[in-house]
Image (cartoon, rainbow, N blue to C red):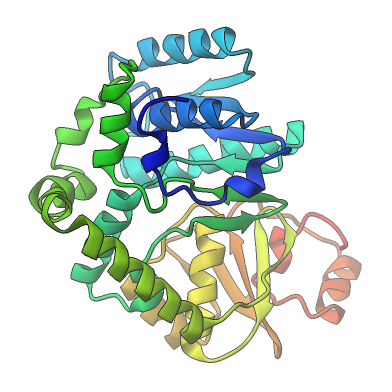
Length: 326
């Protein structure tokens, strides 16, 4: 067993045992550590890596990932993303989710494993807190969540960056450093360098406890709503109180690769849940359900098909986004 493996408080490992798993890999600190932790636990997995083509080292990282895959008999899926000229973080997130979805669907993976950790949770909390967000937006990702027909598992949910670095250092494991993480042009980097790193150094245990207590209270306040999907780009759920509706719209939008802002939430409520936000997400409703869809390909349907959608209760803004009769 690798040294310091026993120090990790890992989440969702039981989901990964005897299952077909895909690890989102970057060859950098967090995913490299998770790669070796999974190896040491005997978890079977393959890897997927994206070259965003914005750094010189990205080609070396992909080559390193291929060497690891060969050494440890893992399948590897790699792709080059387009060069995004604006709004890089949002566009990269959407591209990444779509890439993972296609692999998982084509190769029947059950779980997507990601290396998000405790420091990431604090960074998100602080960024949302300073925007004036409520509890439904403060806590970010879950340790275990479901997207379409697969689970997203984040084993490092309660693991700090300090623990990750100690593991890599103690076991003399090679990893790459993304120098763009020093660029404070990106909001997350600004919060990391100026606030969250310092807080985690002094108050790691208290931060972990507080975030998990807030998570428990969040579950009590919002409960669990069943979210259905017509296809990979259209979700719907039963209407409830405003705060729960907005919470579920947030979840659906994230499934579609988009994060809705506080201002957009206000606009959604004012529209009575019938609008297009940021030109990316279509929201509409009928007497019972609220629909959330990606504003993607629009289809021209015959009068007969349009009438079929109306009879089935599909709201007007959603109908053009459905390819054919359900």
